[in-house]
Image (cartoon, rainbow, N blue to C red; front, side, top):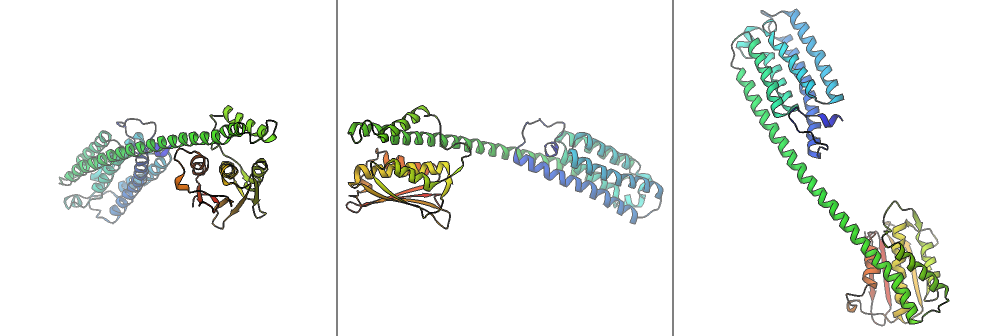
Length: 392
């Protein structure tokens, strides 16, 4: 709450949520204003103590400067706890103005004529403080009160009053430029964040669509192909499991597997289960090195889905009935799953673009979880599908 009130003047429009630039400016103003108020009072006390005492009441100086020191402590504590509120700045203006009104008891006339008084320094710091902390109109009003108090209380005519006017105008203009620039910067950042959020939503939507297309291809269409080709008997347990999986996909078509905070699972166990599931289509030797390979659930889903498609391709196109699946975790933390066969192979560059298997069910599936998929094959030399996660 402190940062929200810093620099909020009476003339400022309330905003429900300050931007990052506005927030940073207010924090800077808060720290600088506290330092300026305390430093200004301390410098005034030191200058008064070492200055001439001709025509000056040391008793008045002790009381007034002691009161200023107490006020500086109170000001710092209130500003740090509640921010630079309008009430605090008004109280600061009143305290400084009262001191300036009794300059004839505190400042020697000779110092005024030499234009070396600590009172002008106290008035200047008050103008800086009000301009920094308040809005343009509020800062101008408080600066006018301080300037008027100095002019009334100064014991001799001096040209230093012009300094107060110049300081008021210059600092007010600078703060207006800073706040205006901050608002523009916040607007740019807000628009950038809005565009980024929109891009993330679109990316998530496209990932959902790719996932569902992959699931449709891997379950529903694959099951229909199995039935149409007569590759399995109608009473086959494999057909029953695949049909159930296809029904689950259709029933939960709007659910993405990449949401939530998924647990870690053993990728080796998932691949072993996949090999058992597809045992009637292709014999897959699964090698994991005998160690657990823990990955997030969505990553395991992507690995097993891509490996399933690769094994199905072996069954349908390689002309062999055996494949080798190897999973390992590298020293760099990259998980790799390799599906290799010694079948007839093919030329990947000749695969039609509309074919969904390699592009959608393997490559895009891995991309959805931040991984990669590489398919290497040549006619007569077999095929190797290498899946990696993360992509580094």
